[in-house]
Figure (tube, rainbow, N blue to C red):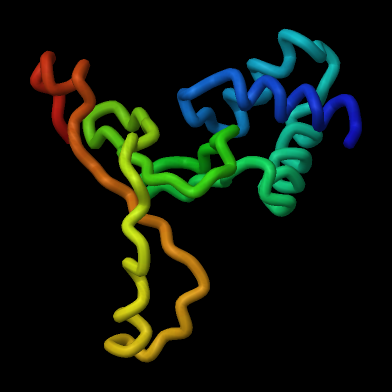
Length: 127
């Protein structure tokens, strides 16, 4: 693991905000001021491909990254786009019956919850 990749991984694990690649770039520049945006993008893709982070393809938003590589659910605010982890156990076998009904061979599952975060709910902000 290169020094740059290690810094990107370490900094991503420190935040719970599920940042975009541009946001990761800004965070990492605090430690490595001369790193390029392209280097950050390439390393995020490598870290995700090796299962060290999650690449979140959240509906309606740009790609985000999660330093927690364990499988878990996310919730997205429809008001401001904020993404948070959902503190609940995974539903075992959720996809088992789907292959019979849809005829698909299931290779993965992304379950996204949506709603209004506490800030948007209190300000009446909706999308």
